[in-house]
Length: 260
Image 1 (cartoon, rainbow, N blue to C red):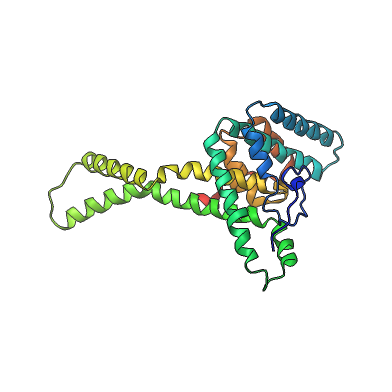
Image 2: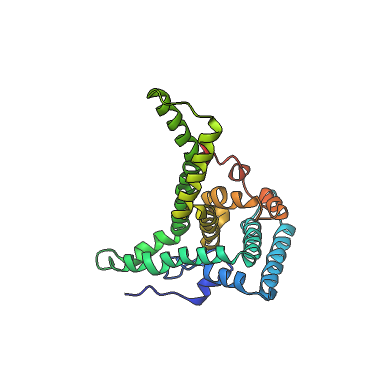
């Protein structure tokens, strides 16, 4: 039983989803295509629409930001990401590959269980930010792994120093040990392609934002995906918009749960 999907889901502008795909293809295929379009005309139209939505929503504000105003704020982040992706095709490829894992890997695996699990009930749960939750989980795991991986040379150096001292080996200058360890570790990292972790992490964050039907309603996407991208990808102007419409605690740059 194939999962039904409508083209309008991929190009969705409203911050909601009721497609039979369960949100697994919501928004992101079109947005990646938009970033791949070298003419830039469609991207400019997209940004103009976002800016118009922002102005329209801002003009009708009361004391608290409306849902439309919050949505226009996160759409500005999406516009910034699309423009950045246009100059970073490698990230588009990574994001596309990860998205394909969802639509061509996970979905067929779920379909294999359709005889035992009623799909429509599953879809309701998936539409409730399941796929972006999955991607945020990947962000957390990759970021945590990268932190430990980056500290490995220090751990190795300390272990060498401690081991040699415990066994009465001839002491070596710290600089010698550091150069040897870091040179070996760099080669090892390249062998395992772990030098690409940072690029993959950015791609997963990007896809989480692009697939989320309403980032302004999903705190984890804001904290763990949007906020980290305000350092170089999302513009200061958009960050100011987000600060205007989203809760301040969502925009904390400390990200305590990621940096320990």
